[in-house]
Image (tube, rainbow, N blue to C red; front, side, top):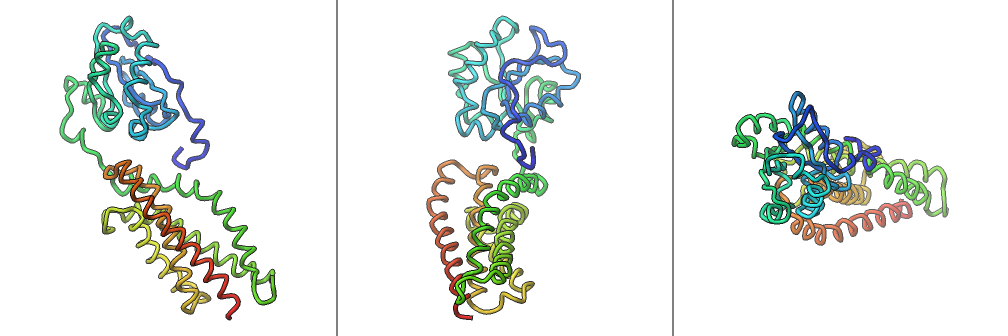
Length: 310
């Protein structure tokens, strides 16, 4: 799932699940029907008798689903009623992951189905200790981390997601690479096309891998700017390593292309970090995408035009 292969099909059927020998007094923990979320919770409940109430979030994890409204008050109340939970348990408490809080209005849940909401820890690995503490979270359980390994774990899905657009772009670049004074040259198509595809790959790696890895040290808050900065550095390294891309026009075209692609890919991480908001993401996209598109068009124009002035 980390590579995004068949990710949409990895969903858990919504409903109520029993862990161990759950009974009337067992806790009820709520999660999304994303398989990674469900498995992470169930794995931590080994040896515990509990109920797991799975909401239908279309296979999306708790945090993202809460932001989109699918891990929300209406779905929670609907699942409590569908499972007839009031007949199965003697208490009236639901334990929700803390990252689900943006989507759930606890007072409405109590009004509509009679269950109170208790927000548990951020991570499933702390659930057992949270319950042993009498449903009280220690300070560290409320903290959202974003370590280097956590950031890099997001890169594979971005790289795999880039393969299909890269394949289409490669086909176009090989065709455009052959255009020149002789109308079309198969030799130039291969040579220039391969170089252009390498530039695209460098931009993708800059936005999908280097930007998240270097995130704490990159200035500013906008992911598009962080990605563009990384792309500019990658372009410099690329030009230094590729002796055939000498000259002002290839240098400018390569820098614009790598920076633009890296900036666009880096924006995919806005929804995976603890310091962005939906309104902030929309605002950044409105500003950045026109600049990224202009960068790509100008780079393409310089690259094609350079074939005629050699």
